[in-house]
Image 1 (cartoon, rainbow, N blue to C red):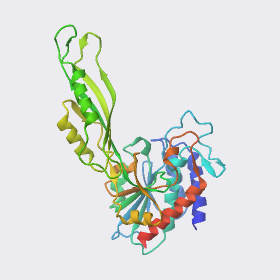
Image 2 (image 1 turned 90 degrees about the horizontal axis):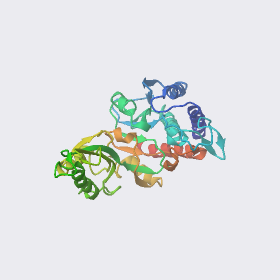
Image 3 (image 1 turned 90 degrees about the vertical axis):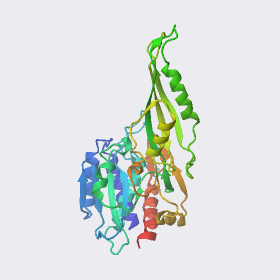
Image 4 (image 1 turned 30 degrees about the vertical axis):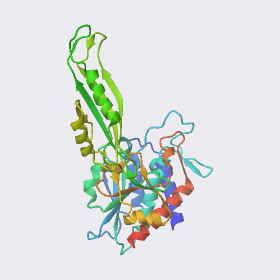
Length: 353
């Protein structure tokens, strides 16, 4: 059965690769996924470009596992030497845009869902969700449909991890900071130079260490990445604007980090968003222990995914290699898809029976 699921998954992935599905333009891939599930007797639900479904014997009294991955892609970079929409198979590799990130994960999770779909007397329900806009952290992807999915116990988020267990993921917060001074003529003792005031705060961002340190990631990382001030050489600038990139660990919530920063700096601080939260799942969680028992290792992922939008324990796990994501001539090994399906199923078997 797993061999059949793997072959169907490869065929589905090839169909998806043929269809351009840049973020916000995933209508056709959404329809293809819907049709694939419906042809196998699965009742589907859809909101915009997001598609989801539940196992045949769904029981409201049981907890539900979310299986989630995305079907949008970035745009192909200029380094491509192949047609990014041609799903060619060569040397055991399936080439094409989105094959690795995260097409291999998505079709493997769909196959896993179909494996458990007809089974009775499971300890958990299953919800499969193929969602949009992950690559741009958009608001019309997973975030849009979470309220429609119902209560969820935990999630497996499909991203390429070489089928190792990413039990934590950094959050992301971008700050727009403004140091306020007073304009004046540079030749006279006038004004209050906003650049000098900004330097003091920038030094704080460079040197501050948050007290709590993540077991998986170590300290929070803050980097000043953009700065802008002044209009001409003889005018003391009244404002200095700078941007701070903050990679938040599972030791803090985004809101806690923002509060600490506001207490220490003199500039005005505005977060562009606090919605991309750090996420984690305890090593003691049954799904993590099931993976460890099958020889998988745990680690903390530095990249951001739709995990950041979930308020439940979540595990990032999938076939493919994150190093290939967004690369020219992207590919996934065919063997990775088959192995991914088998490992997803074997991990879940340990907790749903």
